[in-house]
Image (cartoon, rainbow, N blue to C red):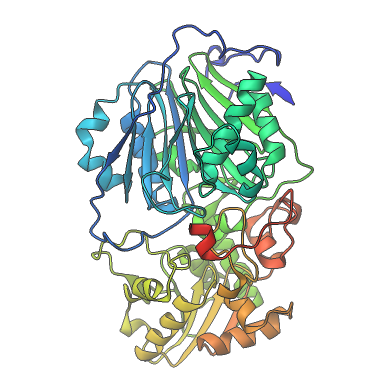
Length: 530
């Protein structure tokens, strides 16, 4: 374990606390402790789609510390709103000395309904979370941040894949727990380590040895510090920013949240780092190391906001470059290129620029049906996925009588693709081709993406063997009803994103879970959501 302090360019060095030796324990015996009450305020869900399962993404986390002593609750709401694409099931805000405020549904709706309550939160530091679940049910009890015995509040982006290992370690001391929520289990295990070590870096070092999976933890301690820890593999993104005008440090899942808060991007939190925000500024320590990193390429092709920059690569530009890669790989003769909205738009533009085939908007989302972000691959049933696709409208003059190339970010189950192709043919398209920025997904993800069984994955269903891309293109094309299909491959994905192959995770493509500490336990969707 190593400690280091740093001074980002343009930020006064006096704001940063030089790191001290590992045996220093600022928490134990600290004066003026600010207690976080264990009580939680549950807010009603005001959701026009009540009764339907909410659209899902990754989780999003925010941590803010104002050195000027200004309230941060409103800024946390704004940061979470910028990360809404990462989670629409529930939201929560933790401020020291106040009950945790939680609600189901969208943060914008919940915050508007509870504006007076949120504006009364006077603390100058806090954390927030928007959730989609890969483990556990969608309930207020499972919404984050979660209180851990009054010692700290915790929120997470990621998935702990080996909860069965943590459960017996935790429940001997805290028998009321179940193992359905990985954040809660990890939080109580972290508390056990902290009580023994009396040092956050050493506590995270011990926890990291026991966790297999992905995590970015955001923590608010009862002493009022904001902590953020990113797993040593770097599966999920996390970044640090600074608002010079308001003297405020910000941690967030993506840099788009920093932009929304008018803060400067300082840098990515590196894998294995623990960042601490307090009255003295920022301290960074390293709690774990890995011989290589396993950044998730799905962040670049699908999950992340196009304005975000992750590991030095802008998401919009990587998607655009992926389109150019596909245009060089698959030279279909066509009249028009159209994207599947919204995440495939930059890739369609890149394909158009490289191929010389004009791009037009042949598919549009119905923006007046208040479904939130229309992301269909992680919806749990064919019926709910088809409902999302029905909210995509075909622009008939764009496609009628034309040879159409559809650009999409991925094919997971294939339900959306089939319905979109059918709609284009009904609108009079002469030929329909499809190119896909992500390679064939054959295997489940245990690092934070909600497609846990191989049986759900189209590439596996049509041919479970590791056949060539060219052969699989033909089989999947026949399955979804296109005249030609072009999957990207890992080499093309690597070129488009700009990271080296040994910096990314390809487990959902290859089935090699090299970034996990142990082989994952295969579970059904029902078991994951129990």
